[in-house]
Image 1 (cartoon, one colour):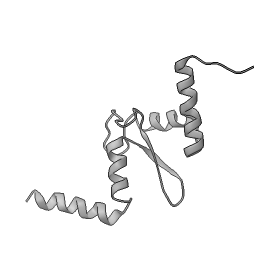
Image 2 (image 1 turned 90 degrees about the vertical axis):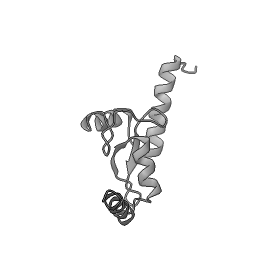
Image 3 (image 1 turned 90 degrees about the horizontal axis):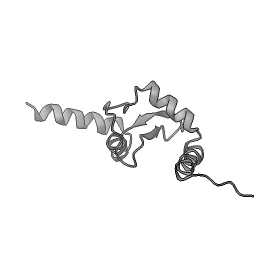
Length: 100
């Protein structure tokens, strides 16, 4: 006998399976992290995740440790900067200098 689920339950189950496979966390873990962050992006503090409608799970690419949940824009920003602190610091200085 196969299990059948309503569409909403099937979506939740799919999200749970994706989180476990890709990040090693449960949906409950995700919700705890989000609640701890005040239900907003850890960087820009927006409550609008963008992207696929959920905050992105940001992690250290060397250790795999989860750093926090980010909106799509902040996640893309870090990815495009290759998580390189020097690139991000240079970008900050560029913005500071351009205001003078």
